[in-house]
Length: 232
Image (cartoon, rainbow, N blue to C red):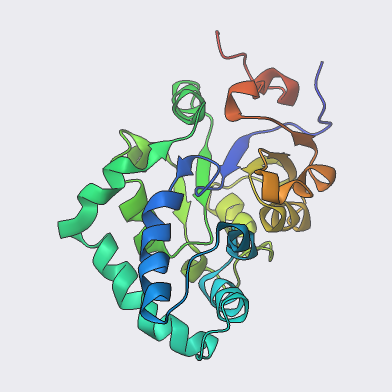
């Protein structure tokens, strides 16, 4: 039994919060930056930038922390700090970025069964490459890797997902997206794709819009989408 009328031929995955826990590493940069302005990082305010593009995150942070900066000024000041963190000499910090439960199992399964799969993230492409640099096989296995700077608009625009499907030569209706955020789910639905969400507590609203909501990737059942079972 499947829950999808059209044949799923490819999978498109989000990165941060879906496959990889990057929160600790990226949060340290923002914490230090805020401290330079006499502000204290508040975890409850983090949901305002989950999954968003760089510009959208900047707008939320400047507003939430009442910084004496425009969003563009914020980006100009914090970008060198992020670039330093992502540089080659500091790549070791990404060793602490852990694959989320079920992520490696899913990617190994897709690779084994030769199911095309893409990575589509609102992060800049250079940041994506740094984040996955310590995850064995990831960079080589993905058919396509896309950052928000490679399309006209990031999520919730469908551009990232449509471009990923185009590069894999797969019709959008035959793609399944796996996300963790509301704006990611909106982007996938706008692209005409089916979407499974593994939402965080702050992204609970995403479940209502998705085709299926899971507690973790360990609960993903490919056979529901017409794909081989994990043990085949």
